Length: 183
Image (cartoon, rainbow, N blue to C red; front, side, top):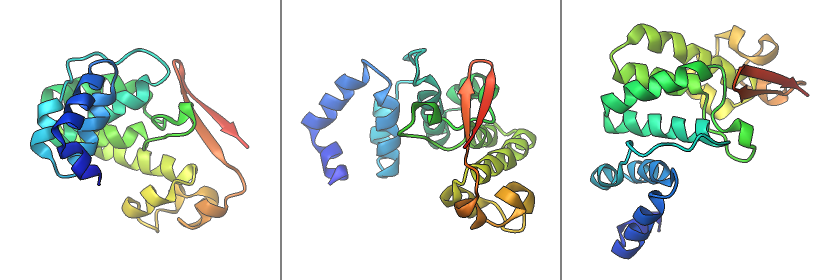
């Protein structure tokens, strides 16, 4: 059904108009890429539009970085990497509550891969995976982090221990870095 909605010309034009008023065009690009619609994603790709410097900036900046990787846009990837680097150690969108993306470190690793910087990618990827493990984001972490990397999992356990860890840690981005809240 989603694929049919996007293929409908009138709906596609409505979405394109909406995308000029906010950062939804980056999300539309990501949805099109997930649906396998590479050419449509390229047609609505508007990385020159600024991301509003508001409460949602980090989330939208990570979405834009992810789209740049998927489209192979090295120029936007360079910009995204520079903008996101100060936010390593944070989950993108966690500060907004209901919708969080993966850690900024994971996006930085993908950007570094595209930019042919394997040393940076190798530095960011484990940091992102460890952060996922620390906060119990097991669905992401278990796909990429070896189960025997005990140091990354809560209480020195296993991926499953992240589900039963007695403490929940929220890593919240702030303009001065990150702040941990233990509950």
